[in-house]
Structures are given as structure tokens and as C-alpha cells.
Length: 84
Image 1: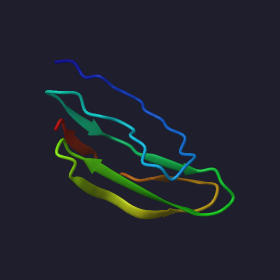
Image 2: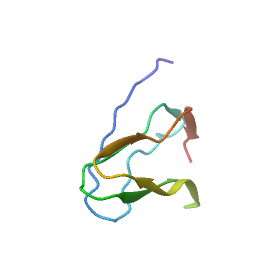
Image 3: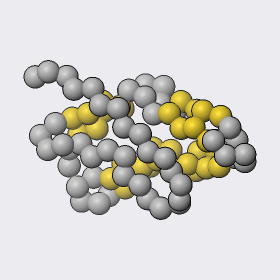
Image 4: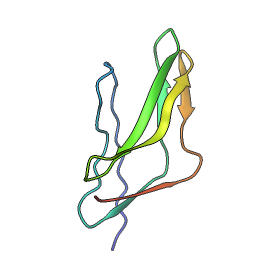
């Protein structure tokens, strides 16, 4: 099976929960990088979670502080996620 490289982006403008990516059925995904850029003039916090098919939420980053006008690499190792 061939590798498929996917680049996903989202501009977070509210505090609402936002889905960035859903792993397709019968596959796994390797998240190699997760960048967060705070383009505001003040610090903010970011929470990153994984949610499985039964709606169980797993925290990856909880209230991660991002300084004003900075970009932060959130992952230092690949993260493997599976469907369901």
C-alpha cells in the first residue's frame, strides 16, 4: 500500500472544538508534525485531544501555553493513530 502524505491546516478563531483530521476506516495515520502558531498579541492556551469511535477523549496537550506571536512544534516524536 502506498503512503499518502496529507497536510491539514485550520485557523482557530473561536474556543469551539474543531476537528482537524479523522482517520479513514481500515487505516492508521502517523502524525509527524503538529505546529501551533499564535498570531495574536497576547499569550494563549491550546488543548489537543484525540477522540475515539466511542467518544472517549484522550488528552495529548492540555492547556498548552503558546506565547504571543510565536510558533511552537508540539510533537517531538511521531504520533500513531488508528481508525475507531
